[in-house]
Length: 186
Image (cartoon, one colour):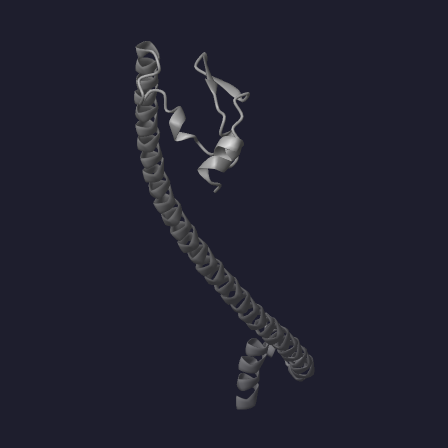
């Protein structure tokens, strides 16, 4: 900074400010940096402010301190709520992941059951197809047996026609054979 003689040379009494309605001359404003507080202007400390302004200034400070304290308490409550909600969110996310895993397991089990049902239906269909094929084969066998029986009966009837008393009342293989046994004894 400059010397005292230089400070006196640069003094400017034309710079005036008004604080709380009181005009204040600031001849050394050039000496301070922009925005810096001049400790000589602390009028309350020097008893230069009226008592009513000092009381309102003190109540303002008291109100400000009370508001700061209220805000700090509110911030503490909000932080507590935030921590509680963060914990709840973490629990909800854990529950969500657990439910997603359960759903995935249930889907896998459902898919496996569907595959088992498809396999069982396929086996049942194959078994039914085997039964149908066996029934068709048996139907052809029965048809062939009936054809043989008809041929057998038609070939035996001429033998029995010579003997009128040996004619069976019912034309089936068993009646014809029993009548033939009687014929063979003669």
